[in-house]
Amino acid sequence: MKLNINNLNNKSFWKNADIEIPKYNINKVRENTNKNPAWLHFGAGNIFRGFIARIADTLLNDDIINTGIVAVDTHSAGKDDYEMIDKVYKPFDNLTLLASIKNNGDIDKKVIGSITDILHADFINYYEALKKIFISNYLQIVSFTITEKGYSIKDLNGNYISTVKEDISNEPKKSKNIMSIITAMLLERYKNGAYPIAMLSMDNCSNNGDKLKSSVIDIAKEWNKRGFADDGFIKYLQDDKKTSFPLSMIDKITPRPSDYLSKKLEEAGLEEMSVFKVGHNNTALFVNAEVPEYLVIEDLFPNGRAKFEKADVYITDRITVQTAEKMKVSVCLNPLHTSLAIFGCLLNYNFIYEEMKNPLLKKLVEKIGYDEGMKVVIDPKILNPKDFIKEVIDERLANPYIPDSPKRIAADTSQKIAVRYGETLKSYVKNNLDASSLIGIPLTIAAWLRYLMGIDDNGNKMNISPDSMLEELQIYIKNIKFKDTKTIGNNLKPILSNDSLFAVNLYDKKINLGEKIEGYFSEMISNENAVKECLKKYIN
Image 1 (tube, rainbow, N blue to C red):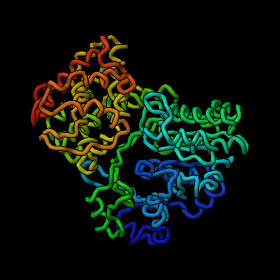
Image 2 (cartoon, rainbow, N blue to C red):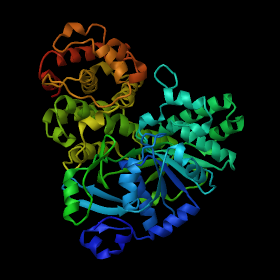
Image 3 (tube, helix red, strand yellow):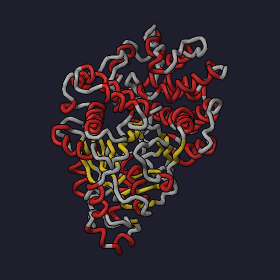
Image 4 (cartoon, one colour):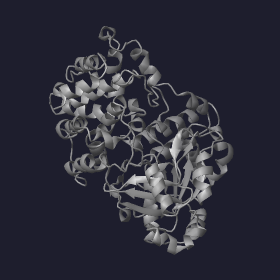
C-alpha cells in the first residue's frame, strides 16, 4: 500500500496495520485552506512534520479547526533546490506517517493529513504564492522551525553576513536570506492592509521570538534607509497589537529516520518506506519520534488563534514561557544532550542511548543536571523540573528506539553553548554560589575544545559536525598538538574569555573556571584514552 489520499479510503488496510488515519475530509480542508489560509509554517523538516503538523491534525480530527497548515521548505532558500518537496511531500500527497516509539518498543502510528500544501522559500519561483498567503486577512500565524542559526544575520563582530548584506542593498523582492524573505513578506502584508499577524518561532533557542523580531526589524530599518520601506512599516513591526513575536519553548526529539522502523513499516505492508538522502541528510516518508512532547507558547496572537490547548499545548504568559524554556535548555535536557554529543563523538559512540549504558556518562549527565543545574533552576509551575529531568534521563535519553546520534546533536555547538551552560554560570554568580566548584560543566567545555581538534580518544582523525564558527575557533585550536601539552600556551584564552560564546568570561573572578578548563583540556590531550581517564578521575 502506497501512502496517498486515495488509498486512505481502504480503511480495512489501515485498521489491520494498526495505523490511525485522519477522520476529516482532507480535500475539503485543503479547499478551505486555499480560500482562507490561517497558518503558514517555515521549515518543513522532521520536527514540523512530527510535532507541529500533529497539533493541527489533532485539532482537525476534533473538529476544532477546519483549515490546515501551508508548509514552506527553507532548504537552500533562494536556490532552485526542491528535493524536500519533490521526494518527501509531493509523491505522497503531502501526507506524513508519524511513528511515536515508546522505550519498550511499542509504536503508535498515525497518518498526518494537516499539511495542505508545500511551497519553497525561493522568490524566483514562489514569490507570488507566498505573497498571496501573506496578504490574506485570514492569516493568523506564521511559525518557524528553521534552527537557531536561521535567525542569525550578523557575525560575532556585528557585521551583516554576506547574504544579508546583499539583500539589504537590493529591493526586498530579490531577497535570498530567510530573514530577508520573511521581512519582505511582512512588508507586502503591511502594504496590503497592514493586518495583524503572529510571527511564532518554535525553534529550540533562548528567547526565540525576540531573536526573530530583532532580525526582522534590523533588516526593515536598513530597507527604510534605502527607501524600500517607510517609517510606518517599522511601527507596524514594533506594535505587538499588529505584529507579535511570541516566545515559545518546544521539546520533542525527532531524530533521523531509523532503518529499524523502515523495516517494521514495510512488514506492515507499506511501500516506499526506505531511508534516502535529501541533500546531506537522511530522511524518509515517515517521522520517528519519541512520545514525550512539550510546547509552551506566549499568548500573543493579535489576529486570533486556534484553541491549541485542546492539542496539549501550554498557552501562558511570557514569564512562564521564559522560565520553562530556561529550565529545559539550561538545566533539564539540552545541557545533558550536548554533553553526551561531545563525549559520544570523542569516544566513538553511534547513538545517544548507547552512551546511557556507560555508567560514567550517565553519572556525568546526572551531575550536570541534578547536582549542578538544579541548584539554580526556577520552577515554571506548569512543568515540574525534577519530574522533567527524571523522564529525560531514565526514559528519553535511554530509549533504544530513538536512534539519535552524537554527531547530529554536536552540530553548531558554538551557537548553543552560551544558553546550555553560560546561563547556569550566570545564575551561580547571581545567587552567590561558587561556580569554581563545578565539575561536569567545565569538563564538558574542555571536552568540546578537545573535540574541535578533530582527533578522537584513540588518537585517530574524526569528522567534526558542521558549525558556523568552526573556522574561527580552529584558528586557535590548530596551534595545539595532540600529546604535547606545552603547545596549549594562550591558545585557549581567546575562546574561553569570549563572553559572546559562553555568555560569560570564564576567567572572570566570579566564575573562575578558565584555568580549570585549561587543566582538564591539558589532561585530555596528553595521550590516547585520556578523555576516558578524565571521566574516571572526576566523575564519581
